[in-house]
Amino acid sequence: MDILDRDGNGLTEREFLERYRAGDYERPSVAVDMVMFTVTEAEENNYRKLPEKELRVLLIQRGAHPFLGKWALPGGFVRSNETTEQAAARELYEETGVDNVYLEQLYTFSDVGRDPRTWVMSCSYMSLINSGQVQLKAGDDAVGAAWFKVSYRLLRERKELIEGGYVKALQYELRLSSDHGELTAVVERTVTATETSTATSYTIVSNDGLAFDHAKIIAYAIERLRGKVNYTDIALHLMPKLFTLTELQQVYEVILDKELLKAAFRRKVADLVTETDHYTENAGHRPSRLYRRRLEEL
Image (cartoon, rainbow, N blue to C red; front, side, top):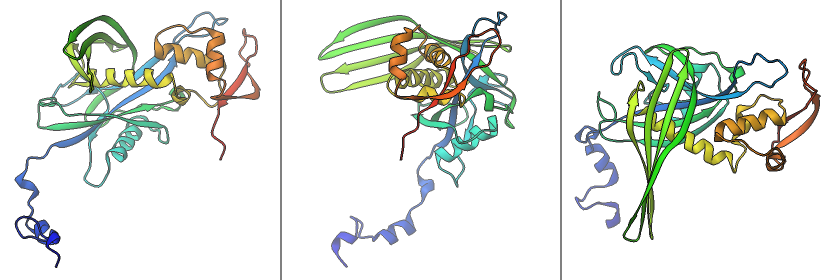
């Protein structure tokens, strides 16, 4: 037997595994937390005016300790026979009744003390859902589920020079509202940049109504969504099969929280959509051509 087959204690891999005891090391529980976004239409009394769009996130009201009665992201613990992605897809289906939708891993949140029960690491995911597909149903440990309108706006920022770089802190107000009330939080995103590295961290400055560190996870997801909408077709996953370019522009604007110039927007998305032979048939509106998402040809 080659000497490289044995470790410093003279054990082969088989002998090492036979003696290994996983219980000798403290292990965390692993959960998935889901940031499920959709875009809905606000109520509009003027039938001649296109209804405004609203970005919403799904929250569940906890029916058990800890944070009894508080609102939280849907999620749960990863089972021993599944990957985190499989757990996320399962939670998505259990909460909304839909599958085969956009699902992306965000980040693993592992701050000490983030869950008062025990050491819990959360592998978070972002999902984008067409609101017309969804049938909400709260899980076993929840007393309700609801879509909350999302507002995420910069409050203040400061920048400090340090040796070889800078620290920039940006504070955002996260405001979530529905028929169940309003939840608010202030989240600070800190960027530390030097000549050799750049690090970003999130801190909850204040929080009213959200469980765990979920204000931070939602903020992280909004930042990811806003960043990717500028260089990918991610917004198309929030659209129905057929849509107008005006409706698509509204979705971009509600995600980015700013108005876009019509001509520039249409040039931007020209390669992302394909026109169809269908038109809108809404009374009171001039018929508009309908488009669909362009898929890559094989």
